[in-house]
Image (cartoon, rainbow, N blue to C red):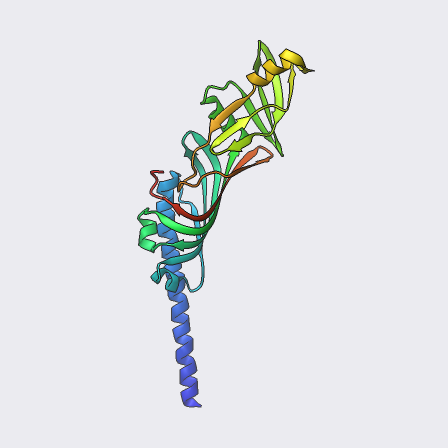
Length: 233
């Protein structure tokens, strides 16, 4: 009985020490990754970082991180202001030192979502010499701009082809009146725009766009991808 009790006590102490060490390693790793991600994102505050996969200490020693979640706010990616950037990664194949040094890392699966406000979309489009104002609505965009000295209002759904986001109006009204014929063609052309979207931090390529109230969500899905968190991508 005494031997059994001693073994149980020893096992309990060992387990507690292991759990404590795992928590300590997790916090240190999250802090170091947050510091590197802050450089990559260019944010004033360190992003939120959460690592998953128990026991994390063993996984890190084996050069893998099962999962990671990062959230950064108020960043600019090549003239595009992003309100919130969330990145979820699974199956990270890299050592902790590689990640914190900003070296390229391999991921089995990943999802990045960048939320961009209507105001930021307008600023980005205008920086490409389009004199329009964009309001993002659920499932559609409303674009307002000059049409032959009058004010045109158009609605439609932008299309993403590669990195090119192109808006062509489905409906157009000028000074509140519907158009037809040549006038409609001219108005549609005046309110059409296309812009090249930047890669998201890490080099993630945008694969789809979701339109919500006052938000465009730029979505990048990744599979067996390589991310570069050095901040140079």
